[in-house]
Length: 356
Image (tube, rainbow, N blue to C red):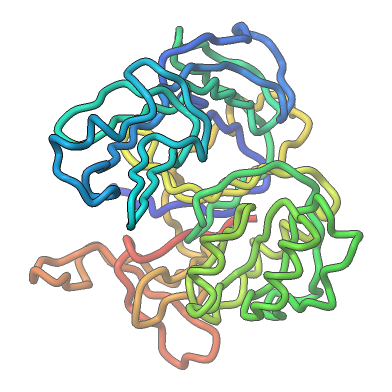
């Protein structure tokens, strides 16, 4: 019998393995079998500095050939931000200054090339766990046992901190009055985020992250610009957090969690996620995170229009009931949604299983 496996997005206890890679070949500072803390540096790499090409001829208002007579620096010279690179006097004086610290690596054709210093980039574990494998000069694979919630959207940042539940219901929004000095350094949990004042208050208080069900579309650009991760479990819009996700986060209120707002592509493809590390249980290998077959009786969430964000119970699995955009028949499920008299027929690939 064929089985169908939509993504599991809420799981109370699994074994999670995650790659932590350096941005360039470098030095790995841990060994296989080591236990690491979230803030521990697992490796470091030297990353070449950025290049800037400055059009001196245009900046000075002279021909390319004439630039040489106005130069104040030479190839190989180190400069600081604001140093004068070239200057022209006369009735209309003009000055070109260095936009950053760096080394002059080339001058010609009326242009100057400025290279920033190489940087040492340190990569931290991000979550307490076990170094399962070392990938020489590239990174490590960490193993963590704990609860896992996969999100729908994130702003591309990651952090580790203590969960702080600020609403008593999965459909209540985060308000500025909720965010006080006690939230400093915490990861805030609420039902919705639709208040720009609350987001600004979180920035001023210096929280470490925000987890909500849905984010108001008008706050999208603002959420992308804040200095901490923002993750939605349901998506963009006025969508309350799913009951299983809210219940799990409520249960672990006050515990440390790793919040990853990045969307990973390629072989490590996955969505934004929340990992709550927990003490290892006996025979944890049996709980390694893997896709789980959809079953009748599962609680599911619909992840695409026209019923996106609604949850219900699987009443029946239909191998070829739904028709896709290309006209092909797709496996589907009958989902009984609260408030609907008749079950909805939804393609299985438009469903996420919620298990808690």
